[in-house]
Amino acid sequence: MATQSETELQKAVQTTDTIATAGKLSPKQASTFVDYVFDLSMLKDNVRTERFRNESMEIDEVTLGQRVAMAHAEASDPQRRRAVGHQKISLTPAEITVPIEISERYLKHNLQGESMEDRIIGMMARQFANDLEELCIMGDTLGVAATAADIFPGMSAGVIRDGYLALQDGWAKRAEAGTIVDAEGANISPTIFSQALQELPEKYQRDLDSMRFLLPRKLEHKYVEKVSQRLTNAGDAALAGGVAQSFGVRRTPVPLWNMTPTVVEHVVLNGTTAVELSNSPFVEVVSVTDTTLADVPVTPYAETTDYTVDAANGTVTRVALGSIADGATVKVTYRALPQMLFCNLQNLILGVGLDIQILEGREIFKNVHQYAMHIRIGTQIQNPEACVKVKNIGQG
Image 1 (cartoon, rainbow, N blue to C red):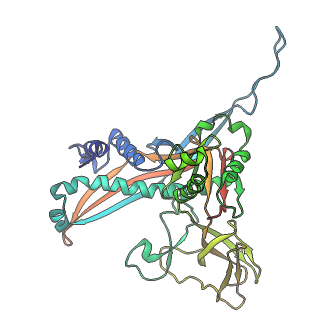
Image 2 (image 1 turned 30 degrees about the vertical axis):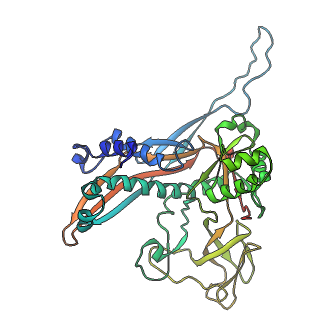
Image 3 (image 1 turned 60 degrees about the vertical axis):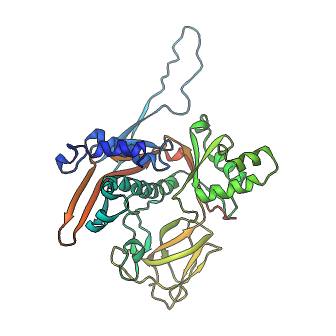
């Protein structure tokens, strides 16, 4: 049985005038669809969303500096004025498509019968919510290397650049322009949360109710497991699943933020000198390839033969007699230790274009129904200075 939100989505998207303009939703229908997607992910109530219809978007920010008050003598003009600062935050969206194909036979014989086709859009929205959450957190325009068959089943052996995650820099990458706390492999504990809070400038700490610790769900579970073992009121509350807070700031687990996220760096390998990666120590190197990696599968360089790895010290070293040229810049894709963000809810921005298209067609030779959704999204951090990223958190 469809939920109320699914029913509202179907009514908004499947009215008779919806597909009249080549599948483009009206602004109201698009907003309903976007709301539904947000309801299905951690994005709801945890980030700031902006909706736009232009090719790009600029957000005006007004600042007053750290202090506007000054001493005043009776019946006198202070002879000074505080200036108002202005700056624009640019957000350039990327085009995303969600293609789905279903056979005619399946539509006729599935368990949901004739209602199956009516649920296609809801299915697209649910999957898109997962993918959107992943891009918003872990996007990196450098482009991580991924096994070709994992991205496109049936593709030949080798690795390719993950074009989807390369569309936008996600918040984990953008937060590196702000304050970074290196846990240096220390396990999750109250000390980690305290360090993040202490590194945030005082002027951004006035409203802790609007702040959030965003962290992988498995990392949150590991922390709660530790706290629940204490014979204290805090331990009992953690075991009972109460409101998750640390030092007055709510913790928000992100389901699709991997405990050991896949990250990418372009580094220069000179001679046989070890190069330390920015996330040190790390879990493992996934692959080392040329920086020109694209959507054609290639065989990555071989560990031991072309390069060596020291995960504990966080380094990669070129092998003198290997295939990597001396002084070459390579793409290193590796799994890092857990990460966490500490910031204001309004600081993480997700822009969504309202010119959403949902199209339906049929391939007569294959006898399949095809559905496609086209949408534009963009991510940004309004003020990186007001965001703290904690990296290299231990897994213990």
